[in-house]
Every structure is written in C-alpha cells, then in structure tokens.
Length: 207
View 1 (tube, rainbow, N blue to C red):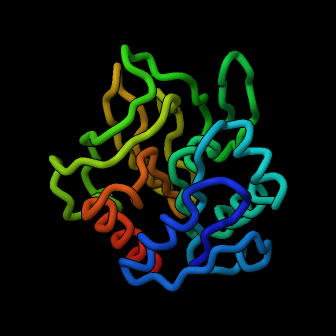
View 2 (view 1 turned 90 degrees about the vertical axis):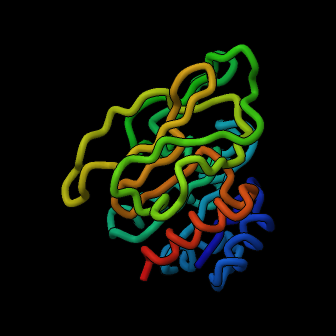
C-alpha cells in the first residue's frame, strides 16, 4: 500500500489510520512504487490548483490514470477526491483536474462555509465502502468546495458508479465508488471508528 507523497495532504494521519486497520503502508513520491502497489491512496488538503501542481510534479495524474486503466485500486481523500473531476473553480480561477470523472468542483452554497465538523452521509445500496456502517454514523468534513452534481453513468468495463451524498446548504458528493477508483470528500483518517471501518472495507476490497 502506498500513500502518494506529492507535498500535500495529511500524510502521517492517513498512514496511522491505515496502519490501525492492518495495512502495510509506505509514504513515497516514487513513480514506480505508486504504479505497482496493491492500493494507492491520494490525500489532499488546501487549494485545488496547488494540489494539481503537486500531483503533476510527481506525475501523479498519470499514475492515477494508468492505475484506473489497469483496474488497480485508488482511494482519493478530500482534495484528493476533488482533483479526480474535470475541473475546479476557486476564486474565479479554473484549474484542470485529472478528468477521471466529468464535472466541476466549486464553492458550496451554504450560509456557513467552510463546512467543518461531523455530518451524516447517504450511501447507496450495495456500497462496499459503507458496508456494515450505521447510516447514522458521522464523518469528519473540512472543506469549502465540492462536486455538487454527478454526471457519469457506467463506463465499461466498470459497473454503474455508487455515489454517496451529504448535505450542507444543499447536496454534494461525499464519496464515490467507480470500479477501481474510490474517493471520499470527508477525512476517514479523522473520522474515528467510522472512518476506520470505511478504510477496513476498502482494504478488504483489495484482496
């Protein structure tokens, strides 16, 4: 298991959380190790543009694309999820993302932004990430931007994506399961036992 080190994200928090659920974890920017590992985690905090710049600096966008094309699991977290979309718009500036999914990440429309704290999510039937997790469990969010719509249907050879939603001033995408590519807008590594259960579910799916 590799956590991609590209200069952004809660690397050590993610490492500790994954070790807690039994993963053998390496934090590295190494291109080949990131391509070859059983599972790749792409965390991210801060601005969309800065995260994309860091990713491109270690060829992370290409690594993600190659892994998805080869049906190799990837988990994006927070801004590491946002950059999987086509574009992000922050302060009127548009930045191209990894374009694994269509759509735009933009500012939440809520009275209080950022969305910071614990919130429930609405997972779809058959979700692997949320298997066995009580729908009333809460996950920890810290973000001002999100994808507020979902545009992708099934794309062969992957089945129809499973999209989880949350609400803060309106619905936004809280998690996605799309073949080998999974992601959460919330921070599982900061979400206590609920986050540990989700990470454990993801690890089980790698076997």
